[in-house]
Image (cartoon, rainbow, N blue to C red; front, side, top):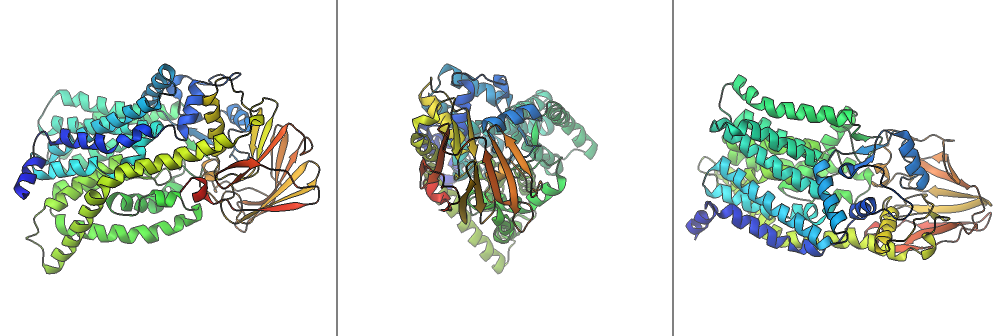
Length: 593
């Protein structure tokens, strides 16, 4: 039986078979519908009456650049919350992915089944090319097929397949993997077309999304462990891809792309010390999620204050797994290639909050490494070493085959339930009175900073002639502690948060803790002034904020909402001199978990 399995895994047709398995397991994505940014993307390509697109289709992912006037306009309209950093920038160069979205949304808006089918097919291609890469490096042996299968059924890929807006990651991986295979053929087989085809594939990967930078991780690892030419020849061989990387980086900066002023994202070049901290905390979390447990989304559901605990949980897991891998593969140069490629490809992923959707590139190296481990000889090991290795083999097979196969479709269904359900419930709960240009929607509290914006975009997609409100104002996100709402006078509402503002990860999307507030700091937007009157003990985050409006809080132009349970409900401001206390929003309940 083992011989038959070995012949199947080493068959030249096995990468295609694994790709078909990947397609079948990800079919539940077809019914996932629009999620989060998908609503905003529909809104971008089909703006409601009275709005116009502010940038070309290929620049879909330039959410906010260094244009101060554009930042002020978005804050005035309520797209960005009042606490947004004055230096906030969130812009990604993903023209190929953006143009693909433009084709979808402009030719068949609302055809989400088709859009999901494209992503499923694209994932099948990624799995197929990953299989070709493994076969290229391993040869026609069982390890190549095993690595392909492990990659194809990895349940960590659920979100990247199910979320239409995340298609850029699949596109980057497809061409990044191709570039690696072409580069290897050019270097080891002296295949001349690969000298220019590999950099071309790398360039396409970068134009699909910044995740393509992880291709460079494997090219460097290749030069270190696979290419056996003299050092100078190896460096010359890397030069074309190095030129592509340099040209991309210069263009990226020159055109104003990048991140700044946010706590959710960290710019490696603009904030080197903060990025080193991110590597130390987020890196082990991503590595543990890739090799073992827990999924990186576990940390996404916690408060930012839990970041300090991530290494305490994940480093021991990584250490134990790493010990087993070293025992089983310490003299294997190819295993070193996979390991170094995996580790280096995690570096760009640490620029944002940990999530399994970031693990496509690291997964290529991880499953090459695990397949090497599972098929390696154990003859050189002592009794204790064999025991450790056998335990690791059992864990890897359990996690990456027995559990992963059913969990991939199940996680797709769960992802859709959470990411689609919250927005749909929020959209359905918005009163019709919201959708008038003479109205200002005031959301006292919400489970995250994005749900209101997405909910309005979702309702706008349902009714083409629906007008957006003149402005929206999110006062706070309170998912921990309690929120006291007091009214000192006719036009002022005072919010006191026991856990302070910016205690959740979505609030940090718009302002880094590195930019503290100060007592007396005022932020003015049309019709409202927010003034920080008290800080938390950290002297960074506001504890109490006064919101003074230019009219009575009972003015009919103000539509008041709070979040209760799983939806928005109307809110009546307390009488002058009175106050109410709102409990923290149960975030798990809010997103339908």
